[in-house]
Amino acid sequence: MEAQGGNRLSCGTICLKYLLFLFNILFWLAGAAVLAVGVWTLVEKSDYISLLNSSFYSASAYILIAAGVIVIVTGIIGCCATLKEMRALLIVYLVLLISIFLLEIIAGVLAYITYQECFPFCYQLDEELRQNLKVTMQQKYKQLGEDGVTQAVDKLQQEFKCCGSYNSSDWRDCAWIQEPLNKRLVPDSCCKSPGDLCGLRDHPSNIYKVEGGCIMKLEEFILSQLYILGAVGIGIAFLQLVGMMFTCCLYQHLKEDPY
Image (cartoon, rainbow, N blue to C red; front, side, top):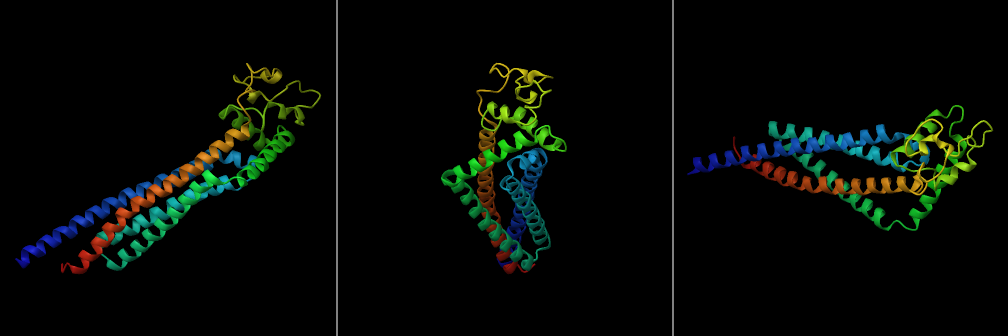
């Protein structure tokens, strides 16, 4: 009977090892996905950071990258602890899981609260961002040495189908628009069908005049990213609960299993 019980315990331990190993693979892939999203955010949307003059957007991307790296490292530690059956390393892995779990829950809840109830602070932030974007567009667009800003503004207006910070009338006070040799009323990137000199006409049929300003589209995009960041944090955190249970069970089985 004792031999049969020992065999059953060994089989249970082996089963737990494979389950925890599989969990760590999934956990590692989740970390890689989060890391990829963070890198993609910085690579594809980094042009907007200079326009907004705000560290919030870049900070959210770096948080994703840091979270992805930590999850990947934790997953590797979990795989090593599982394969080598090292109880001390399992404890380290469990502590890391608990720490990340608590941090992600806190970050997710804070992100959700900020998304839902940040007024009146959001209003003040929006006004500051709007003024920064408007001044940047008016003073730096098509100016010498500001090619990065020019490309970012053109990309912004085409991607979000907008014109100006508040609206298309913001371009009336633009230094480039007011140049004597320039006959355009708005940049060509404001046009629904961009082409050379298409900015000579500012009729709604030609430009994004009634779709709203770019800052409103950017705010919606940033808030949606904040909401996604919170949701991903909470989702991965609850996934970690499964890993914690597997880790505790495996630790107990290794402690009791004589082989």
